[in-house]
Image (cartoon, rainbow, N blue to C red; front, side, top):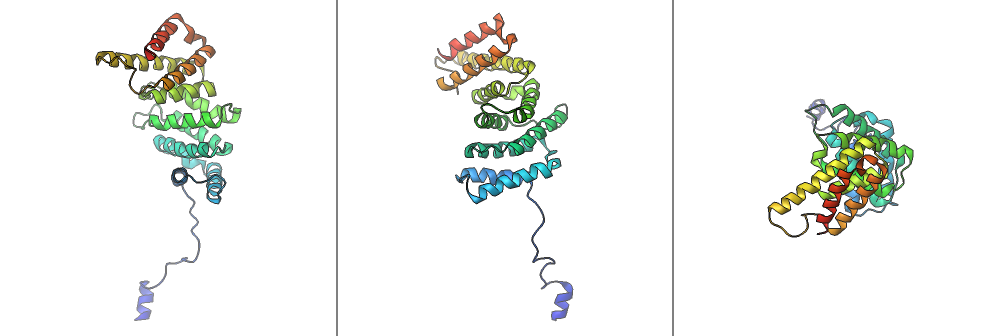
Length: 256
């Protein structure tokens, strides 16, 4: 009976059971592990953290073709990874440069595809915030791919309206100033900021509120005004009388 069992393979161990698997982790799996490491407050000097960074660098250099997939998923994975790197104060320049170019190229290919899912605004916002914290004075190698990505996002009339929260708007402005987006992107973002603040004021007025706009603390208002002012200084088109008049009205209402 044992020979029959052996022939059928019922009692036999699988072939190559004693050999290690050659499959490498996908970027999504690496991103999930990075996110878990952040949640459990894993130290950046730990062996696991160093192995994760090594796996990320290997993946970004050797398997960049894997990044050519769903844009929304790639933004989510990047947000998880860079959020953990920022928490560790670790600049994985090579990996982030590859991720930046991958995000830019994929978004460039999919921005005119109505079937492509837009990235979620909180993922984009998280990427922008982490980049600004990691690179307050970004090098050309890091700045170029993410600046080009910002130019695409801020000029995209489908994506920009999804940035509706003051928190996301604040991070977008901070990124635009730190990474030096193009004039057209700065103009588009500046106009959107005015739309968001006006809409918030109109909503507050229509409901009869006398307090500050919802979800905008004094600290958040200071961040938005500071970044918008810095952006306006760099872009003359944002210094027009109309823009200044609108912005001063917003400023007065934010601090009313």
